[in-house]
Image (tube, rainbow, N blue to C red; front, side, top):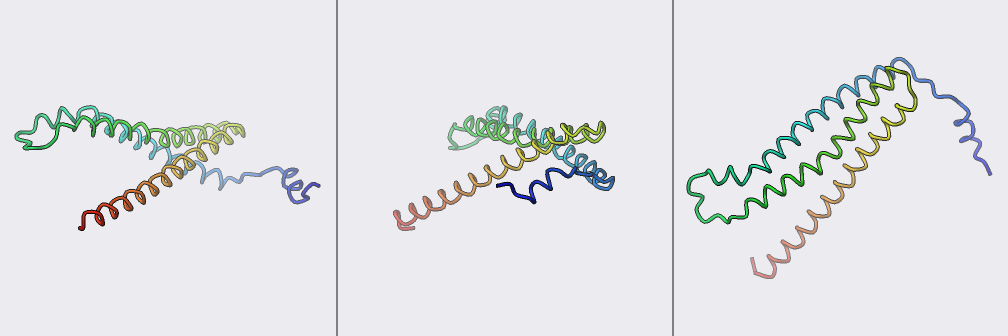
Length: 150
């Protein structure tokens, strides 16, 4: 059985006002700014990760610090690659939004929102993973504290 409300929505054409286009242009400008800023920070994280071991070897008298600093650099590179994914989706949203508004192209508008959805989906999943990791670390820390009588 068909839903009459859905049928009426499908039969109506979406009309986008000039004010809405103005908002979308402003949104695309800001998301372009944040995506470029994100690319810069990803690049800095990559450089930091790649040269972290070299930088620490230049420090005088590091004392009894372990030599596992290369591992920290690898972690930074991995985090930079992970951070690159939502930044890329945000950049794609912004550029496709601008192109769609410039050319009045509905297909590009749809693609732009698909990229925005992917951006937020990725950020949401990573947030859930982060919260779960914090909870697991908290439980493990409490367990160690209880086991060793701290």
